[in-house]
Structures are given as structure tokens and as C-alpha cells.
Length: 223
Figure (cartoon, rainbow, N blue to C red):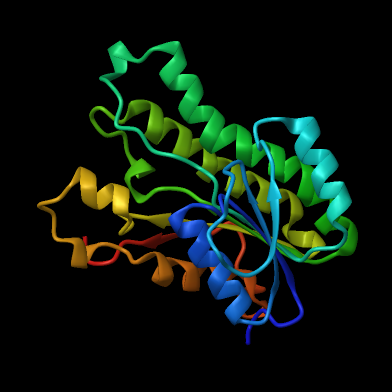
């Protein structure tokens, strides 16, 4: 049980990947705190916390009320194909940066100082394998996820000598109901299973990954 005795915060916990990470964390012995804006979390382990992660003051107050924790899994995020770069609207740009970047920044601001003060802890973020380069009709999304990756690297440089690990996973296509609906003719068996990605995330949260800092780990399945 690699996470035995640890308290793990999982954002985006009402989503497919967040739920898988929460389940795997609990299976490995962790106490879980599940964070999402959605009402009616699916049945699963852990304390539930409904929270607007785009509101910095609300996030700061909620995290301060949690008590000690050891791991932060920043799973909250979102995808939208969107238009061509020259057709991106302010609303589309802001929406993708809010859900992928603002949520992350607010969580890092609220949690990293607490982990640094304790002298230990792990943060795992979710980038995107596709965001290693710009892709047609995905300009805003790949831009937002590239910011997630740069923030991961920068934060790691700032705290790795103070006992805190900050890393990110870079999944390709995750096998979710929405992705299946959007791409019904694709080879779904080649995609990354949420449960498989959750195991990678929980490894990075464990003491076995203590010497891994600032890594952007591709998790691509057979895509």
C-alpha cells in the first residue's frame, strides 16, 4: 500500500480520471479529499468538497480548513477542439485557461506553501501529450496545457530542495465516455485507461518517486 497513511487531495474528483485517482489512492491506503464543482459525486471513498477552483479566495479558505495533507493531484481541467487560431474568441480562450490554468494556479498557491512548511509532499498535475506541439484547431487548448507543463517545471525548481516533488503526467487520449462518443470509430483499446493513468499518478505521489522532480511523463497507451 504505497500511499498508506497519506492524505491525498484530488481535484476534478467527479470526473472519470479524478474518480479513478481517488479510488486508486484509497486502495493504496490513503485518506482522500475529493474536490469538484459538480454536485452529486459518484459513490466512492473520501470526504467530498464542492469548490469553485477558479475563485482564489474560496480555494485558499477551503484548503486552510482541511488540515495537514501530503499529496495534491490536480486533475481538474477540460478539453475543447475549438476553432482555428485566427478565429479564437476571447470567451473560448478564457474558458480553456480558466479550467486548465487558473484552477491549477489557485491550487498551487493554496497548497504549496503548506507542503513546503511541512518539508515534504507531492504535487501531480495533468498536462497533455498533444500539447508538446501546436495542433490545428486546438490552439487554445494546447496553449493552456503547455502553460500547465511550464508551471510544473517552474514550481519544481522552486520547491524541490525543500522536500516537495512537483511532476506532471502527459496523457494521450484517455478512454472516457465523452471521448468514445466524439470518436466512435477509433480504436478505443489503444487509448489510456483511466485506471492505468491513475496508477502512474499514485506512483508519483508515493515515496518511491521521492527523487523525481519536474518530470513530464508521457502516458500514451498504444496511440
